[in-house]
Amino acid sequence: MRREIHDRNILFLCEDNAQLSQMAEAAAKHLSPPKTRIFSAGVKPGRIPVAVVRAMNEIGIRMADQKSKGLADVPVNEIDLVVSFGEAHKQCANLLGRIKIKNWPVAKEFTNKQSGGENLDAVRQERDDIEKRVFALFMDYWRNVS
Image (tube, rainbow, N blue to C red; front, side):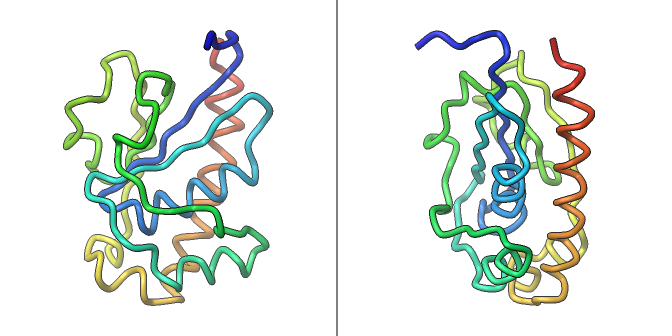
């Protein structure tokens, strides 16, 4: 399949593809401009916490079709931009050199995978931050890519 010049593919990458990258994928699918495909993956896929699904539902974004995935489940050769939460991209040797990588910091609560995803208040705060970042990403990055 040949891509058109204006097609854009973004991958949100994190350690477990259970929390941050899942929220980013859901928000991006909700906000994405035309001809944009959204993916998420994790270095070591995990389970999506109920608090993450609940927090996204609160703002009208459903995650019913989302599941935790690894890089093998994503068409890496078609990705234009990787948004890496923390240093997840450094653990992925198969990311092609031509791919632009944008690093997003991870809140302290989410550096410990066990605590962050179960604390609904922390999830809500991170959700709101991710939604703002995704919106800004589309406004800045996609507008400036030829």
